[in-house]
Amino acid sequence: MKALLVIDVQNGIVNFGDFKKELSLMEKVIQDFKNNDNPVIFMRHVDDVEESPLYRGSEGSELHPSLKQYADYVFEKQTPSSFFKTELANTVERLGIDHLFITGFNTEFCCMFTAISAYDRGYKVTFIEDATGTVNTDETYEMPGLDIKDFVGTVLHWSEVIEVLDYEEYVEEYK
Image (tube, rainbow, N blue to C red; front, side):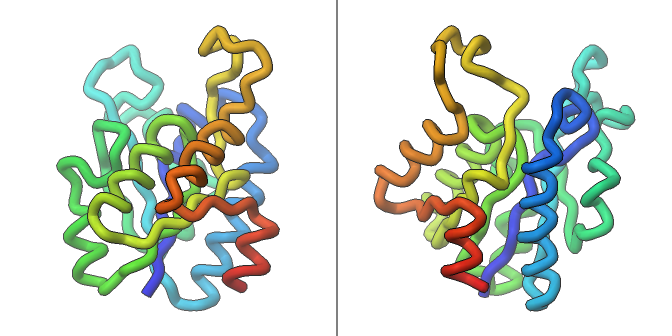
């Protein structure tokens, strides 16, 4: 059985930039999972530092209103991995999930760490590259011309253990 992880689609991230395309693709994938009665699991990153845009209990830490109604489960995390010290692993095991699909924010942190952690736990993992987003840029990393999503997708693809697709490939393969 498969499940979709929607990682950190929260006000404090989404309101940081123009993510209409990414949110639209995430919603299409979510609707596909919902139409097939497959679980949609949302992760929320929360911080205990008041200055953080994801401070626990703040408006920034809340799920973005464009997608939150789709959540079958919502778990909080405090590290880039959705599995570390959360109830995700227990829930996925209880539901009999063996294939996890990854969408959400930030591509190079929480999405990538979660994909690798899922693989390490024995799951088949599909990373939908263009249904992820990041608030960071090539300037953040002082690497002119860096396409963060493409770079992460390429690294995961080259691992030969994590399937990396764009939305159109996902539709061809799984719809």
